[in-house]
Image 1 (tube, rainbow, N blue to C red):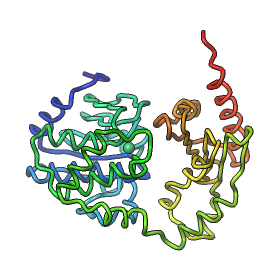
Image 2 (image 1 turned 135 degrees about the vertical axis):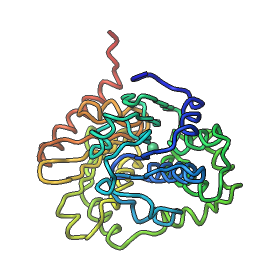
Image 3 (image 1 turned 120 degrees about the vertical axis):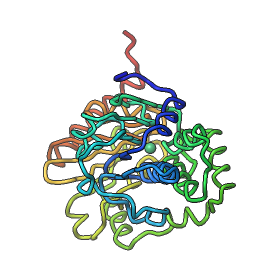
Image 4 (image 1 turned 90 degrees about the horizontal axis):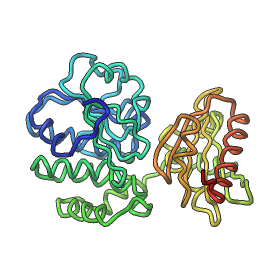
Length: 331
Ligand SMILES: [Mn+2]
């Protein structure tokens, strides 16, 4: 069964049969990973099943209005005992759940994801790169399990779907996305209230970080590449939190004429996280050069270099990549 693909019906049957679960999603959780993991936890819990939930790192403050967010554990709190099944969500490879990687390697894993670069590391893999978010998949999974979409579940799934599609703006937004969202609204979700929590709740520190980051904006490759940088120093002097960097990279892509937008984020001395956004070119291929991955229009990787070195090297690759996209070499 290793590395094979499973149908949603197989996974639904399995979830209804087993009793003891560990649900996890990638570190530095975003709205999709928190929302879909919580929705699944609420559903399994309502069936009386034992389920432990972790998003590895803490739940970002802006998602702390979601029902039962307090149930989410950090990875240090997770017992390394025996779980019937480990469910890994929204993670293209096991490095995305690094602290639990060893645990996941020795137990049965269900891998549910929508990243085109997914490595199918589970015994059961359900990868739907056409889904705008894992939230859409979890919605379909719960329907397959014949479970009611309660208001609590709907709030979590709506958050997952709304955030991963950039509020229904990105290329991954489909008629299916809107149909599911409409059903969630009918289940009791108030869209204005949800988006107020997620988008209209900025902190002073986070806004000061936007100001600092935008002051580093530079253009490259005839204005087709735009990039910004967040240094450790900026994080320190603004008092911004890690989660305040989410979405910063979008400023670069939103500029007229820009094909690739890049954010360089210094995680620690000598380790740089790079985020890519695009309109047309597949930046997941660019991220893969550095062992990263993601979606065609949103991807990322880590480079173990100093900030100036990482910037120079990645910009070189981006320039070359853009050139190749324009003049494809046909073997
Ligand atoms: Mn996602």
